[in-house]
Length: 369
Image (cartoon, rainbow, N blue to C red; front, side, top):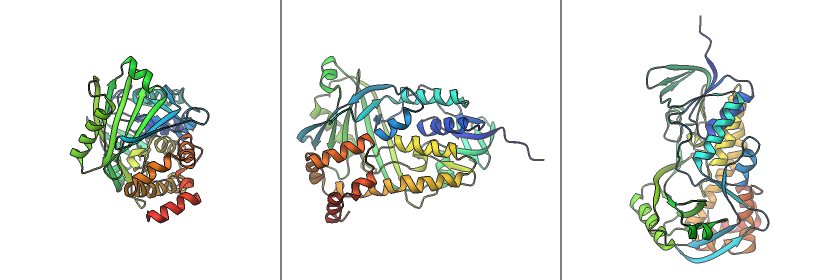
């Protein structure tokens, strides 16, 4: 006689994707457990910028722990050619610290009825079984992998990646002058290396400063961050945290599941290739998988219909930006370019919709992206 699984859904990983999945599954009546290797609240390398798509979803389920709301954006290209654009109405970007944000989702999952086990390190997954490092086995009808692109579940499902990037980031102690200078404003710097960019995100008493570049150029990425901080006049600020991470964007033909094991968020390689924005993809994919735990093919169809077109469009934008950063920078200075970028940040305009605009489509054709 085959024993009844102890759980309907076991979620591996307690970030936004995993906790969104757990909340959705538990809300749908599934017996749900989350296995998190660390303990909330815990730090996670991330810019922490919530675009409108993320905010609209998060506002339904948590009190978003905003550290700043952004109404101005300063653009630079390799530290020069500076201009600032301001919101046409309300703020277009919300900044959070990931320890705050993830802990809010932890509370939402628990409130919905999920059990969250902290300090639970997963060693292996198989159909219906999650094995912890101490040998304990957790049985479940469905396993949702949300343990990152280098995690066990991603490897088990066989996710392959078309794009890999290295992000380096420092959290700096902000002086009173820094807080006055940066409150309500972020900066994006288009880097000299193709496809790279840097950012400054204010979060009350800290400034998040980071850069991202294609994997395989570690020395250049490190130098870009050092040069960026120097140009900003922030080299003497105390470093509160110094971290790095790889972002991996899936191939269009990569699988999302293997049997009753499905992957979401970073574990599935779901993120926007140009900006490398992943939180909105994590929240949505997690919710869809948790809701569809009894019919995982529905989750696959939803990703194909709603996220893959966004990723394809983002890849086209990255290709154009990598070839012609000067033109992209100049476009942001125009009313049309700024309105499109602001609308994307607000969640009112998808990346797929951006590339279908006649003017953008013409430029992409010209760029041969």
